[in-house]
Length: 451
Ligand SMILES: NC(=O)c1ccc[n+]([C@@H]2O[C@H](COP(=O)([O-])OP(=O)(O)OC[C@H]3O[C@@H](n4cnc5c(N)ncnc54)[C@H](O)[C@@H]3O)[C@@H](O)[C@H]2O)c1
Image (cartoon, rainbow, N blue to C red; front, top):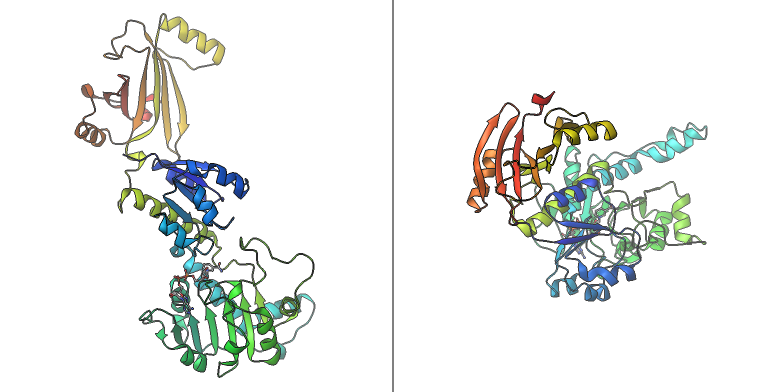
């Protein structure tokens, strides 16, 4: 049985996320606009949060979230969350690096090729009426050495994208034995000695904050190209600008900037542009993008799916809950008792335009797959025995996919069945009672029988 888990969604995501959590039986509330304090005031009502990067989940916030069981971040990293405090409170932390790692791998390669082939500058020049071939002579990757720092989800994805090029790929990581067939793990010194290209795929931590500064850059034996799709604050932009000017760094592909807000939605500065950033903006050795390496149509969907799967796995194990479509698929009919069904049908036909026949009225609609489906509206005579043993004035009818399979489960669960199942040219029927004695007709329909 699905537990009553209430989830607060703090950022918009692909619609499948809400749809599938709903289907799995979770209660979902959305609040995309309230400030952090307003959210803090109601967060004790929720068992789960789904967030991208709207605000920091810090200790003060977590202390208000007394019933929180999980935080799901629809993205790769968890740096906007006080991980230590959340874990001390036994709150499960869910991220979805599997959802955007392919996008990041492809985008990193796109930036590298744009730098090597000068596609951005050449394109801009032609638009201004210039046709410079010599000035846009490119470089080839063939024979170069690419160094990857941080060999996790994103680093591995980038290494995989390099497979078709004749390059040597090295990786450096604080964890041992993470190298694989696509990248040879080496010391930082070896990577700095051999690399022609450096790509950063590290999280933003106290150790990686401002990691790429003048000392770090000068430790490279050769001039090199820099790619950063991890976090802007991993690089000291002023030191990068100096290195670009001196030629120690040959070019830079930056998807992330030191000046971004922590929500990644805006640049930090308002007004004066820092000199180093000004340098990047006018440099033809730099390719910039606004934190979109992991931001594709495909990853939008995949991130949401990974989050749904991980939330379901937390509560239902790897197999997940039984999808609702395997049980009830919709309302099949509204049946109620009437003192004079014939007169009542005439009234509904005359005043509400119901297309009535001797049974009542059939409404037609289409399901999500575009199939024709029908729902029945029927007044029954007051003395009908059809609602027995329920004494209520109404009877519910639900549409189901697999009546026999459902009945097996209901019997096994001890649900009361009424009468014996029946089959007609318009479908199969069976009847059960809910705990309040309401009779429910279960209908595996053959809708076409009514057309
Ligand atoms: N630009 C984007 O759109 C985008 C999208 C997804 C991820 N990211 C960023 O990419 C980075 C990597 O994400 P991931 O999912 O691959 O993370 P991950 O945790 O899977 O991998 C990171 C790796 O870096 C290593 N590492 C940590 N500190 C290190 C250090 N000081 N020196 C060397 N290695 C170190 C870790 O051991 C780990 O193997 C993160 O900063 C993430 O936020 C950016």
